[in-house]
Image 1 (cartoon, one colour):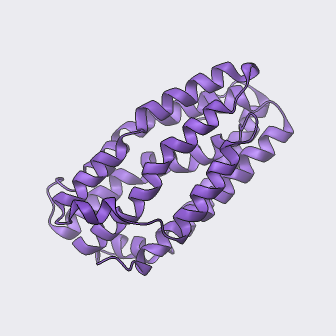
Image 2 (cartoon, rainbow, N blue to C red):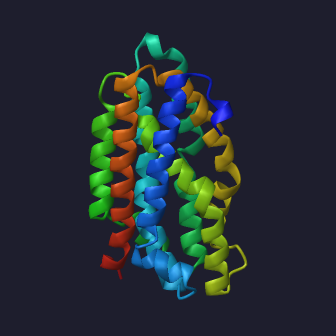
Length: 230
């Protein structure tokens, strides 16, 4: 991975991001719904509940990415263009997730009418705040966690979900898609780290945001077991 980074600042930032990612993996392993998945005790209702909660973050994701892109000035024109491209690629992902929910036996109105849980509320508020700051290079830290989840875990989660629920892939297309395509998104993140991490202040900001997003994303998944939806 490090051979994709050409600057000393970028390499140091990447090392920090990888340490945060490993801590995030350990934290996810303590989340009840993920524990059930890994132990083969995951049900179809678990899957519907998980999709209901994830949908809110997926819908809002393109919003904060787009807001962040608009906050970069001309000195970060290349970074801004890459962030805009990323938002364009992902802004309708929620439609695939909704289709999976219906395929798993859920009502479309239930997932569309769902509300953000406590973790999703905190994650959305934090991301919109950071995205509104001038030249928010720290959003790279958030993208590292969220895209890393897709690239490193989504495919495995989809396989485990199908095995546990007797599925044939009909209700795990969203996760399978991200497991197959987020490699390309991470390649772009390596470029962003190289371009945007221009010194110690940038490195600290990127790592801090990655750490906060990792905590809030885990909280979002912990709240799946507090679902009050019918």
